[in-house]
Length: 403
Ligand SMILES: C[S@@+](CC[C@H](N)C(=O)[O-])C[C@H]1O[C@@H](n2cnc3c(N)ncnc32)[C@H](O)[C@@H]1O
Image (cartoon, rainbow, N blue to C red; front, side, top):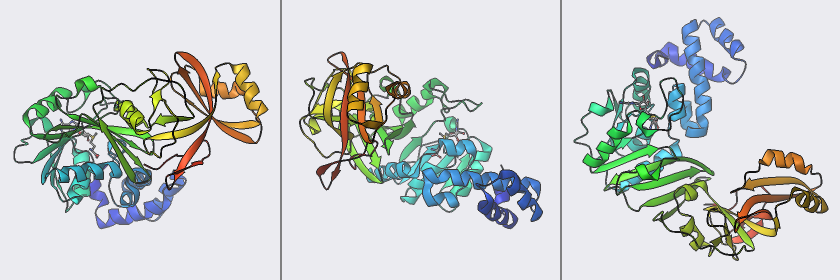
């Protein structure tokens, strides 16, 4: 993909036509562009770009309409809501200049530059570097170079978001296979005073550089990434940042506390994945005056309905020893035809269970499969939302409280 061609007047015109055609039949769109006199190569590039822009709306909102993407670059790019938060934290830490090692199409660089930071993006891949340069025009500069040999002195801070995929495009999970590789990132952590690194949410805490903060970030309940804040950028050992409908909540702690264990209660909380992965279930339990029903399972039971954005909250109606027959009978007796199934600590397959239950009826419930004191249980419950701090019943699958 040659981004320069798309930025010529003919390229812009083709892209504009392609934008109005993208999303429909691709063959018809290509034919329409060609019959409008657009050369085949340009028509293909314009249609690909227009399609990527449509897909990019999820991550970039209206910005997607004018940014440039490669498919791999879009897949790896940080969504703007997360990049903007990270940029704001860098600004608050006094960072005025930043080098972004492995800047991809420039999503993080763009957010930092818009936040007022002078940014240089370093990108190894020629096509991706050209796309980043187009996205950064007038805002940040891009150097096509190998990050591992780039001189990072002279910048207030370094950001690195290593590629976590093989040359064939498959995901890699071993940090040694990241690009730039993990030993390079570890070396950076040891030698630069301020470093932020984006890693996969499942990153092994044992590999976090000494003294660094691990921040787990979720967006609308999906845990999307972790940031390691190293050196002077670290503030606490662990942080869970929960972004929901544009509102953010942050929970911090040591990541080593154990939550108390006790009896089930009237309310059950299903903590956000960012809280669980950050190891902050004990800190969350304190917020809702709760305890675990089983030391190994991150469901928090409480006698209190506390408005929180860090978990979904359910009012428990029944805690039944798990038995398919008993469960089916209970649900049928209540006329339950619709069931939302959640699980922690159960090997059951929710789709299979749903088929086995063969439900019909007008009522709905949430069914949480879990363990209490080592025993398998089925919890019937109603999700509750918090309007203006007051608990009110929601529908199964509702997003629960705002963060
Ligand atoms: C995960 S992507 C970065 C995405 C970026 N943060 C964004 O939000 O758009 C990682 C990028 O690092 C680049 N890369 C990998 N190894 C590199 C190296 N040694 N030097 C410079 N860039 C590298 C890859 O080509 C890829 O574009």
